[in-house]
Amino acid sequence: MQDTQHAKPPHPAKDVLDHVGYRLKRAHAALRGAMDQALREHDLTVPQYACLEVLAARPGMSNADLARATFVTRQSMNVVLRGLQDQGLLTRPATAETGRARPATLTDEGMRRLDEAQKAVYAIESRMIHAIRHAIVN
Image (cartoon, rainbow, N blue to C red; front, side, top):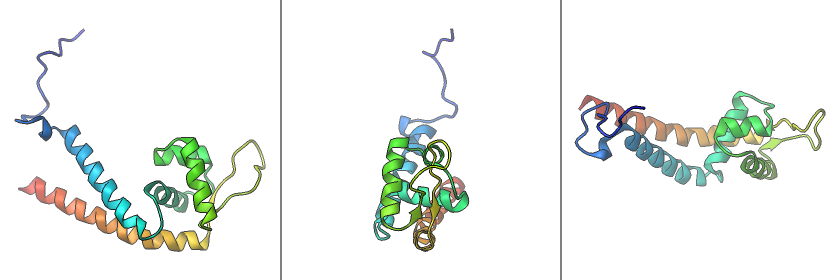
């Protein structure tokens, strides 16, 4: 067993707040907060937006596959899918043809709403990437 009591960090950080894990968590929190705010204008939550993004790229995914792709539980994805379906943004068959999977696909309104929301989210991502690049150079 290794003695971790005297382990050295992978970089010379003078403060624990400079460690990469902490900085990544702060970046994630900042991105999530900005997305929450921007997506409210499109009547979407971050998990709903993520679901629309994934379905646009991979139509017909099941609840379980969508849950894995968007980092939520299957139970949470059921709620997300019902909300999106109630808004007319996606469709799912009432019953499964085989097994229990009910593949979801975006409606035209779902694609339109995703396109509008993407503009806001991509602008946030662009600002974040610019800030990261600026921080690396300086």
